[in-house]
Amino acid sequence: MNNNPVSNEGLSANNNNMILSLNKRVKFLSVFISIGIILILVTLALAAATLGVVVNRLKDKPIDRPSLDSEYAESIQISDIMIHLNELQNIATNTGGNRAINTIGFNQTLDYINNYLSFHTNFKVATKYFYVKNFILASNSILITSINGVTVNRIFSPNLSIAEFYFVQYTRSVNFADYVPISVIPNEGCSDNDWLAANSSPNGQVALVKRGIDATQTIVIGGHSDSVPASPGINDNGSGSVANLGLAVALARLFETSTYKKYKYRVRFCW
Image 1 (cartoon, rainbow, N blue to C red):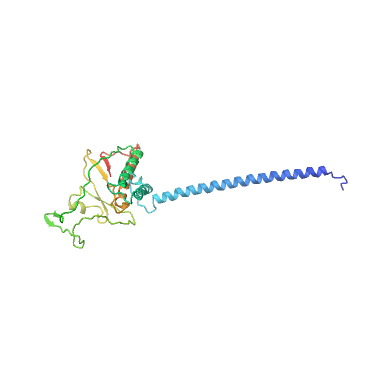
Image 2: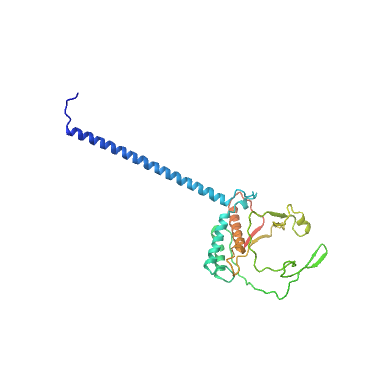
């Protein structure tokens, strides 16, 4: 049994030591918790970023997308096309609802295409001005065909159940549930035999007709950049305009690489 008295100073010192030790533990625990929280936040941020990249890639390249077997085709991203379409929609929305010829919307459409090409490609960009004439049919059109020696006067009629040809003022809207295949037409597509000899029937497909092997010739890829007065023209022909723009930008990028083989033809994109 210890009969030595314990002084108040001794108790105070012990209490202070206990408080200091407790403070150190609290500080250590706080630092440990803070580091843990930071690591969790960093992990979540990395996971979110990774998920975002995966989602964007899945959007740009659907799982069921067929192999296009073309570096040029694979370099075109749907997300880029959608950006251009949204820009055309914004132009129409802010300029009276359309991008028809002789309107501010049409001029802004040309400015957008011109500026985008100038900034993102090293292509020579030029604007040519010409007069656009409107016309009205004075009488029914005449179409006479001669195929394999048989001459036929085709029927022109607004009654599409009997008409063999007619003019269309506005194109119909259409939704594609899947990719539209391409049917390559052999030779120059100038005879029935060329079309019948296609590897897959061109019925319901996009026909690709290759013509000419003269390296002095020019490949022209075009699509009209205006809309009808009644709509913003995102389908007719905004889709064609931005597809044309996507093709031009993608080709310019490929030409800047050392591995992509240069074409022996000139290429001209027109809007």
